[in-house]
Length: 114
Length: 115
Image 1 (cartoon, each protein chain N blue to C red):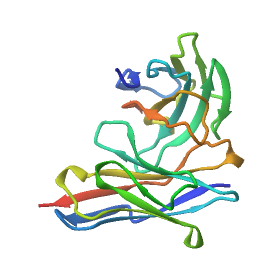
Image 2 (image 1 turned 180 degrees about the horizontal axis):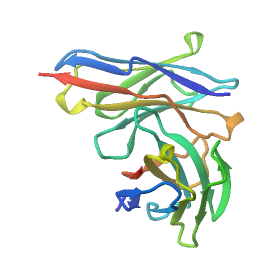
Image 3 (image 1 turned 90 degrees about the vertical axis):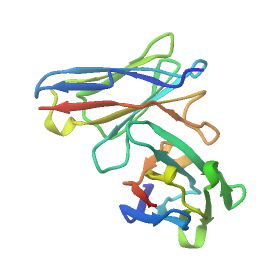
Image 4 (image 1 turned 30 degrees about the horizontal axis):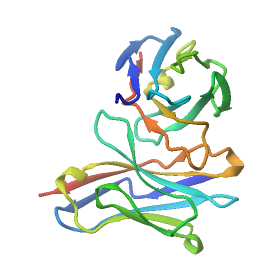
């Protein structure tokens, strides 16, 4: 069965500092991996997705993630945090064995300090 | 273009009641999926409908049901509500059924509180 573990339920960063959100997955077949962002009182917005092309994936708002098969990881980074990055971030996995249904991690809440 | 819309935005029910949540997909999208997001957790897949047929079901009891209409809008019904059904219910639409090239677009959700 596919699953996702997000390390750290809360991350606090200073404005301008590196944002690093950790995600590890398990999947019995090649996975497809996603990062979504959820702002307060809003639905989920896709930041980026990995679909077996380039292992370094660039998304919206300056975010990027790197797929590392050997580490079963898909960590999300942004070089310089902005106040508007404060939100909840979800990592998700899907695969052919599960009909491409999304399985989400528990989420990481990011706060940005001025 | 309008995104995915859901109604109502908030709802309060008591145990044992039933509830109907509604979702309108993005124009042109034929697939709708429903997710339950309990406070402090990630969304959990409930159902997917494509072209009015159920294409997938998550690990939820039979109290949960859904349908999709000819205009591709969808309803999620929950009977015999339990306290544990309190959650944010998210609807997502996509052009086709869940697949590697299909991006799901999420609505703002309906927040259900069961007392």
